[in-house]
Image (cartoon, rainbow, N blue to C red):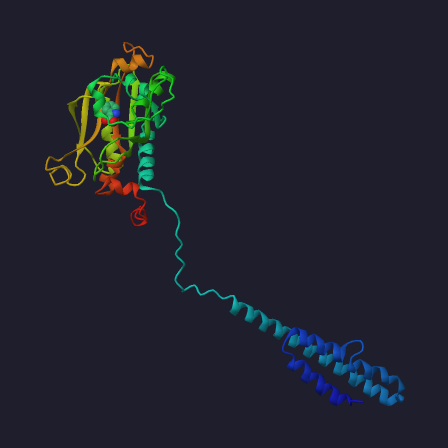
Length: 346
Ligand code: PHE
């Protein structure tokens, strides 16, 4: 049987040396628990003579209190240690360089198309769409370009073969321009209106730095009682000014498109040199940007509108070309090669 003294020393050691909360709990049970060593001693007290029992009893109680206090302190410090250990393990080194993660981005043509839609939107233009596979009627005939008309040569066309076609049915093609959307829109909507129609078009041509077999165009159409080319010039000037973020000049040169009369080629001041003359504008200060004109009476007629009641302007330009000028891209084919080194720059 231990003396109380020895027991206390032993218990103190066990408590102090407990390296974990679990070990401490075990020590507590071993000495202070219901069948622990100290409890055992207390149980033997009743067999001692009166005076001894009293002093031993007092001592034993004191020992118990002391050991309980020690255990409580040890618990607290173990908990602190454990917490600090946890903090150390979970520590985040905020000075380390961050992880770069690669997110997808918008294609430059999407970015610019959205810019363009937003700008025209701010001028009250709605966005319209038409199919990429078009009928001969909408792409040509309705636009005053009949089957045997030499103007058809202006657009090198991808015709869609269909040997089983009903001879009365329309021949299909990949639209060569977005102008058919004009006809489709006029058929379904009552003027006055103003729309833009962005979309993909196709040309059966050899490719080079400024030609692709597919590219994007943006058609514009504004119809009312007295819409004029002066309105068009103002709209174009405002649009280009907002897109390029500086004042832009616009000039119209007489030109021919079967679906407008009069027709014009639209030039804007060269973005590169600001109109002073450089290699981009071939030292003229002007860059050709769009085709435009007053909607031809025959177009209104084929879309079911009386040209005596309504008039308006139409225009069309290449979105790719505008993007090339805005971002200074030297080759239109870059848009379609999906080279990540190119795409990442936007
Ligand atoms: N559709 C013509 C083209 O692709 C451009 C244009 C549109 C010209 C509207 C005049 C009016 O060349």
